Image (cartoon, rainbow, N blue to C red; front, side):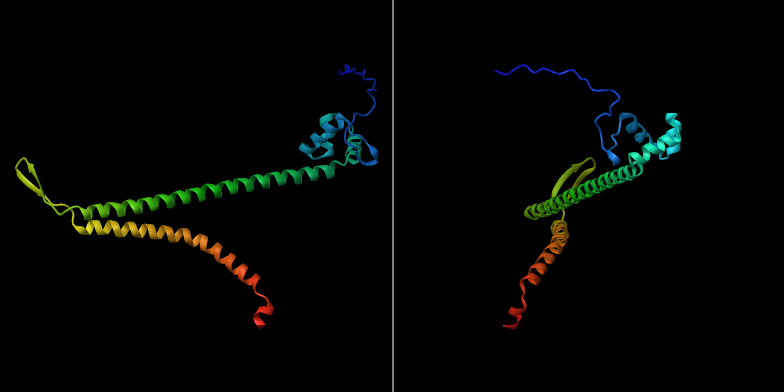
Length: 196
């Protein structure tokens, strides 16, 4: 059976430094020092911090030296710069991914359109050449179906669209494959092999 936990009263002296970051010469940073440093990060001058806190400039200068404000501010700037660079990089990757997806979808539509054009042309070729006579108000009018040239044009244009789309896609992947093949061939050859 678990024993009940007892909490001991906090007998710590309020004048003692709060547990915090240790700095040079074993100095412990108290909340007022942390607040002053945060103000220094915004204002960037000791004089401005002293005026804002209504403290002597010499005291604030002592805090700055004791808790290494200048070095910490540089580190903070570097960290924020890295965060901004990572965010810009993430946005660039998102944009590249978006346009890559758009290009892929566009190619798929071109392939489908090319196939549909070819299908339509083939259907037109299968139908017999028949004349249709449609009555009109002032007599009869004869409508002839389209000639074979329309069907052939659809098939040729559809095939051309498909070929262009495939060539586009292969142009990108072939470059990568050529690099890989070149690298493998170059790595696979030895001086001993060439002498035999």
